[in-house]
Figure 1: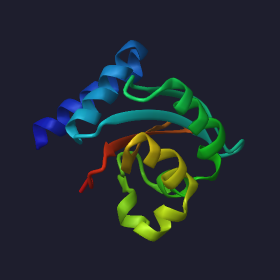
Figure 2: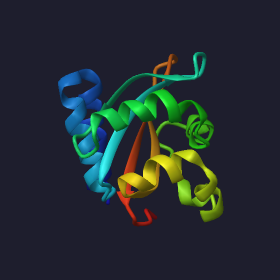
Figure 3: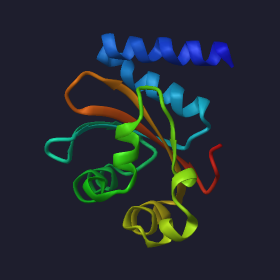
Length: 144
């Protein structure tokens, strides 16, 4: 476990210092958590919107953009993941009941049609401007 965490940490640092390595670092994090998809976003508290993002190819680009423009500003996970320290973990199923999820547009209208049920959110760095975090999504499985 320690080797896994060290490897991921090293790759994330490489990605911060060399933007060309960022995709590989996030994909390593996705693989380590057995996620299906990663979607990294920089979210501005001030403007309440996504200011930049990077996602792997497992999800359609149009759906990623739809999320960023229409769902991110109102989704219930943003305030929780934004309050976590860098490296903290948000497991949505620990914060939201199945009933909450069925009534939330992000879960019912966006994630479910894509075949996703649960997400894991991790703030990966905070440089004092927009908070950057990564969501990892899993196909109909619980991440614990």
